[in-house]
Image (cartoon, rainbow, N blue to C red; front, side, top):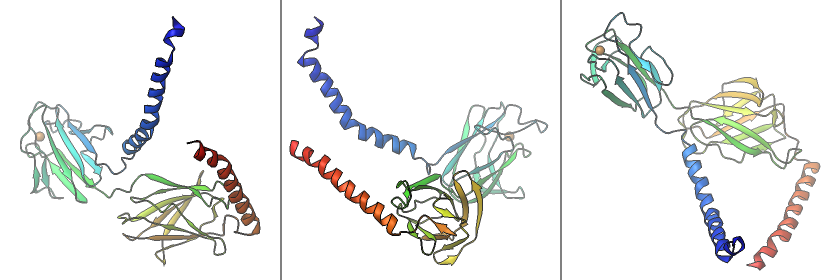
Amino acid sequence: MFCRSVTVEYLRHVCLVLKSLYFALPFLALLLFAVGDDSFAAKTHIIKIPSGASDPNASYFWSEQGTGVTTGEITVHPSDTIRWENADTAFHTITSVTRTGEVDGMFDSGFFTAGKSYSRQFDDLGDFFYFCSIHPWMNGVVHVVKDTGNVQSIKNVGSGLSQTGMGFEVKYILDQRLDSSVKIDSSANTLTFKILGDTQSEQITLILPTDLIQNPNSVWVDGNVAEFTSEDTQAGKKLNISLPVNSKEIKIMGTHVIPEFGLFALGILSIGIIGTLIARNRLLKPSFYSH
Ligand SMILES: [Cu+2]
């Protein structure tokens, strides 16, 4: 019985499943990538108005979900939305005011009752003060600041030059990407990074492994001397470099960059290249013909 069921039909099914998996996997991977890379996605932040907030003696009038901050002060990025939810029994409003507390007409929720909410998207940078027009002691402020971006990385910087041949990983924080090919000048002891796209960031954070560059001590942005701070981390020196908006190139000089591109390195590199060519010829050719 069992043997009969594990027949061609069954194998055909297994084969079909495997085949469809084989084709689906790259798409699944892409999907995961797309879902994972939400560094610039707009977020919605929720601030609850707790019950009893209409009492001026209440211990607090706001409660930010997620952070627990109860001051009504919140820092967000452009195009983020804030949703104020009324968890109180009284009516409230979210009404924009100036720094000194006069209604300025920029936004106003009007009265909203228990269980209702008011949402507003903040696109412009700046400080936006608000209060409840019924209970003016309930006040807060929205700070909208530039998105500095998430941690990104360039892998295999200086591969072929390092002793392992693997190169180094350079992590960075910026709203745009850096070109994955980093120029290494071992006679000038410099690394040069190129920024892809138009950056709005006024700072870039770079973490430079010590074996890649030692004592980075001078930085130029688009040819001009740039200000920076530096601190030691486990992964290497962390530099915070000031950038003018729309900068394109960052050059960093240290006392030493990875081994000079001397004869030794050239030798290793050519052995590597020849090795790769031989391997390719051996491995790839038969598979070409087998199809
Ligand atoms: Cu109120």
